[in-house]
Image (cartoon, rainbow, N blue to C red; front, side, top):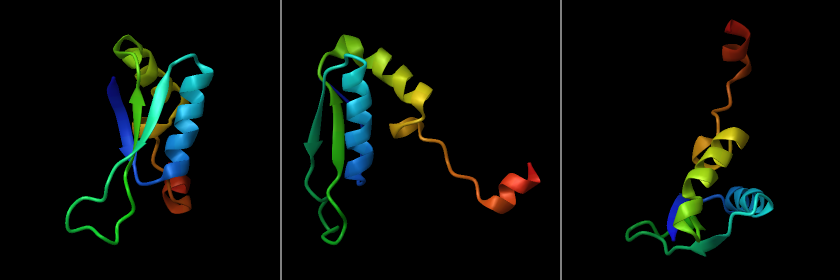
Length: 83
């Protein structure tokens, strides 16, 4: 089993897991504890790929869909107009 990525945004991880499951990639969501000294911070949510041989396919799907670690930054309107 390999951790694909983690986030404090549970809905983001849930959505990525649905995409992986739809593609036939078995995965699991784990809720990690708050790190020491970060009591007010939310728990980190981890997305794990169950079969190591599916990791590459899972990574490529994340890149293709722009989800998880491959999520693209949102440009502000001022920056988009300059492009």
